[in-house]
Image (cartoon, rainbow, N blue to C red; front, side, top):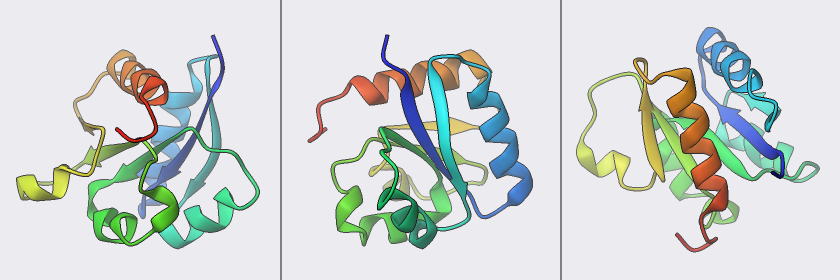
Length: 117
């Protein structure tokens, strides 16, 4: 199995590092960056290959405005009640209650999706 390169976008450093740690437990997944904003993600992607993005649902508007992310599989991390329309852009959605195994499964499935999902 190919190692999947993941970037994490989360404004909260505690959540960002926690997600990076959990994702890093799986030897088939590799966190290539954990950043606070979509602008930081765009800079990261200029020099690093990213297969899947795990991002806070709250940054969805910035994601929608980033043309280089339009065909990228993105897993949303939902930590608050949001309008269903905010979740449509995401390949799948994880919550604070999503298990480590389920998050790993979501990432691998997202990496295997066709680019124009």
